[in-house]
Amino acid sequence: MHRPLSALVVSLGLTSSFTCAAHHSFAAEFDGTKPVRLVGVITKIEWTNPHSYFYLDVKDSKGVVSNWGCEAGNPGALSRRGWKRGDIKFGDTLIVDGFLAKDGSHLIDARRVILPDGRYVFGGTPGDGGPEDAPAAGAATH
Amino acid sequence: MSLLPACEWLAHSWLGVSLRQSSWAFALIEMVHLASLALLGGCLLVAALRVFGWALTARGIAAIARGLAPLAAVSLLMLIASGLLLFADGPLRYYANGAFRTKLLLFAAALAGAVVTRRLAQLTPPAAAASMRLKTSAALTLALWLGVGIAGRVIGVL
Amino acid sequence: MDSLPLHFCQWLAASWVGTSIRESDNLFSVIETAHVLGIVVTAGLIAIVDLRLLGILLSGSPASDVIRPLVKLTWCGFTWMLASGFLLFWSEADRLYANPVFRAKLVLLVILGLNQLVFHRTAYRRIAEWDLNPTAPRTARLTAGLSLVGWLAVIALGRAIAYL
Image 1 (cartoon, chains in turn orange, blue, red):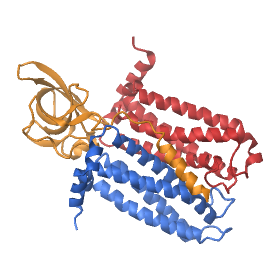
Image 2 (image 1 turned 90 degrees about the vertical axis):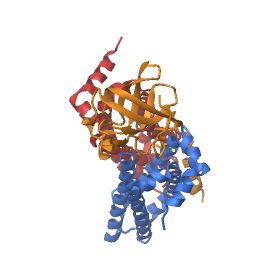
Image 3 (image 1 turned 180 degrees about the vertical axis):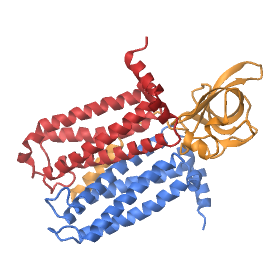
Image 4 (image 1 turned 120 degrees about the horizontal axis):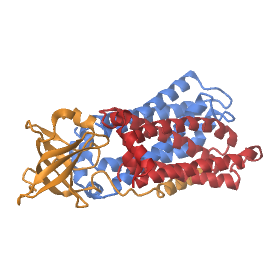
């Protein structure tokens, strides 16, 4: 009976014809071995699907200010964790623990965010394959 | 018996670690998972269409079920294999995810439904229309598979 | 210099509809789910027709018995895909405009549409001749093969959009 065999061959052939995506949500874009803590002032907020972004002006040890982006989950996921749209505003100071973007740009995947009122929130995108926990509290401060 | 220790073991195993570190493995496996679902979905939908007498009516219900079986079996195997690999990428996260648990329960029910429907289809005489029981089973099974698909999407959103 | 299409995409994204979807708590996810499950059903049905034409599946059934009812359904599926896809595009038009994976997906959809047209204008016209054969004529097998690979590639590209 050749039909089941050809069905198998066709299916296997098809799977190998897929485009290999350049990115995977977490592992391709961010480096799980490079934890970072950012402390900065909010300059821009994008409360959007599929990812939210907020941008911080961060002062380094020499006093030089640079702007960093933080990528977080979608608005629905964040609000289910208690982090609502209006909870952060321009000029607020945030402490964000996350992992550095692999391409060296000023972008982190926000794993844990400490809000102005002191609350901790998990910022990650659900189902993205990233680390279960936020980086250790003693991670390098940028 | 808690499955948590098994999940922790898997998370730290060679497989779990390699998957998490790979730039492309997760996305590629996700695509295979979706494609397998498409092929399986096609089989289930066409089988249901035949049961209700809306397509492929030149041949009997049992014959159509037999004809779709090879592709259904292969795509189901690919679905499970890719699903296991996706799970291995983050066992602890999925273990804690309510949508994932719901999906597994619905999957088990949908599989049972498919087995029952297939059996009833095979017992249908060549020129006969589907019995009420077969129609109900087919419709319910399809609804369960839709539930599996939706639960799968909710995993990524919760 | 910014082009007219880009301006239009920026206008779409900034509009009330685009912004509401983009900043929604759940609406975006619902539309996205409808889109993904839609392609699963549509591509699955198309795959079954293609496999019949290739003589791999259901070759005991007359080809027309498989093609006619399923093609009707795939048109419904395609409409569903276009509607949900357009809403998703509306919410992120300016970003997607520049996304090479998205552009590749659109080009592929056009190619698949043309491919479908070729099948209907050639081998399908003469279906009475080969309806009961287990495999379809050569041109039909070629268009079926392209369709099979192409639609699975559409699924892959659709997933890849998010990652670029």
